Length: 244
Image 1: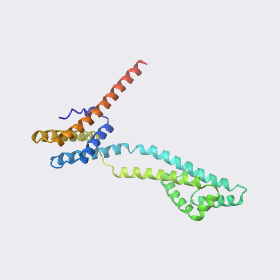
Image 2: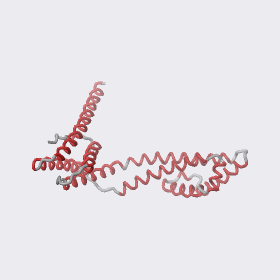
Image 3: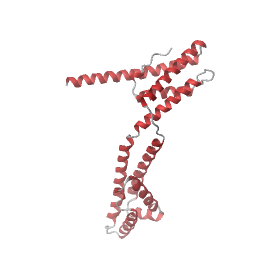
Image 4: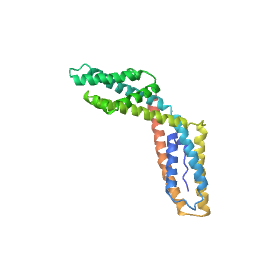
């Protein structure tokens, strides 16, 4: 028999983690002949929808993260650009000439390209790096001692672009969700799956049903214990704040 899972104790991330753990376990065992296909399919569908709804609610987090990545690539671009400009004033003719040639290339793509919009900057950084990646220009950068600075600029730009792409993928997968209903559907699908297992086990007892029940009960105990501990801790902190 399943222990009573008090879903109201769980935060959304805990509910999703709980559901994901059960789903992975069921997919890892042989359920052939257990007549659980329909209940498992509904549960997995509700879990997938809940995960998408959760991702949508978190997509706004990308805004601040992208600002951080954009600031970092601005800094490394300016550092590389200024290094090349400084090299133009060196007494070493080879270094000065290398710095001058690289600065001419940078100006061709926009000396202050970092000050523009993010999409415009991405386009200009792509064209700039394409030109600077030539063997001849890499030799000039090396002569000016800027190889590591250039690599840092490329890495920081790539980090920004990767995050922007991730944000774009999530946003294209967006759908309008009634999140409260979505999470409720997941809870109900969970309970329906458990009820189905209990009924089937009464009709045709099977050790596999017992093993699934034991696994789910262990998960339920862990999640409820953590949730109750958190709730008690929060209540204690609230009392201490009121008494302070």
